[in-house]
Amino acid sequence: MWDGEPDRLAAIRDEVTTAMGGDQLVDAIAVSANFHMMTRIADATGTTYDEEYLERSQDIRSQIGVDEFVSKRPGISS
Amino acid sequence: MDFYNSTMPIRADLESSHRELIEHWSRPGAWWTASERLAIVMQVRRARDINNPPPAWVPASDVEGLVGDSGGLPAKAIDTIWRLTNHPGTITVEWYKTIVDDEDPSSISPAHYTELVGVVAQANSLDRFTDALSMPRVDLPVPLDGDPTCETPDGTMMRDHWVPTCDTERAQVIRALSAVPAEKAMMLRLCETQYMDIDAMAELTADHNSLTRMQVELVAARTSKLNECLLNDRPHDAARSERPHPRCPGVLRSNRRVWGRRRRCPTRTAALATRRSDVGRRAGPTRGNPR
Image 1 (cartoon, each protein chain N blue to C red):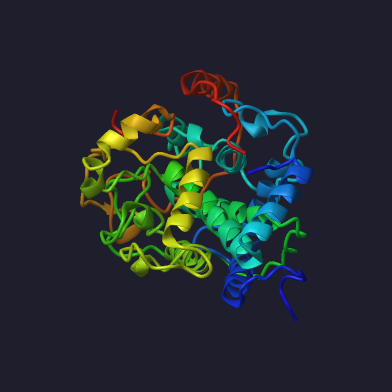
Image 2 (image 1 turned 90 degrees about the vertical axis):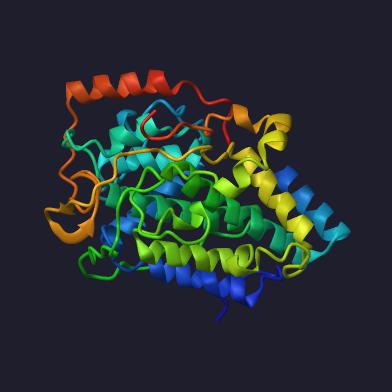
């Protein structure tokens, strides 16, 4: 999250390690790394919401503003 | 010998999956050779490390001296790598169509594109893991000889994604790479060790490794937000056809562009440059670098 800011990154690592532990730091970074992968797969393949979640998430998507993202792109025929 | 020479408490299963990933890259894929796959990873690293990467609407291959040694990758592949690495949230279907445009001799096939996406996403994941821990990036192996397998799963056709898929089970994002089974399998393997086994996702209160499910999802959601990732809210309705591909008999697909054409040698033309410029205007500026 802080590419190009090694001092800030190191400080955050120290803070997380102190507050939670080294295992938690590594596992959190692994989760983040995984979603750098999954978001790119979704963004690049035109992955759609699963229908079962679409209606249920309508309110929260509107509230947090993610509907304004460029990646809320239309389907291939639009 | 440890894969990571680090004092950090990296779990053995996590380390093992990353070792498998490196081996995965070193083998020929379905549509790219091993040399090309490793060139893709090297290009991801170049795109990540450049100071002030070009904005989303500027194809990296158009910027003199930017991409360095292409490793034999066509310009459209280079442009995909840079955009997906640095500006993933700006990708649009219009842009995708320019990458796989069958009328454009510099285009790559949807099959090549799908495998490329898998490798680029994996490389971003691995390098962001080591970078975040300030560890050296993993050395890349020597590529193995051999031709791409041209593996085409039965039932591959246009469904709900921009790219062809063959899988109708599980969540849409899991299906996204189903037309290139080795990339889908690698994605699931990384998910298993970095996030959680997909089959365990329905258990909402279970801890995962040292984190609670709530902590896991907080990190996942924050990372997705930083990448400005939002799934499409409706599937495309591209015409579906069960006409067989002329070069892949037995494979269901909607048109010749969908599957299996080997890419042609990229030739940049004035017309292409004009088209790219037009694409850039349509795509518009990115709202902040997601890195």
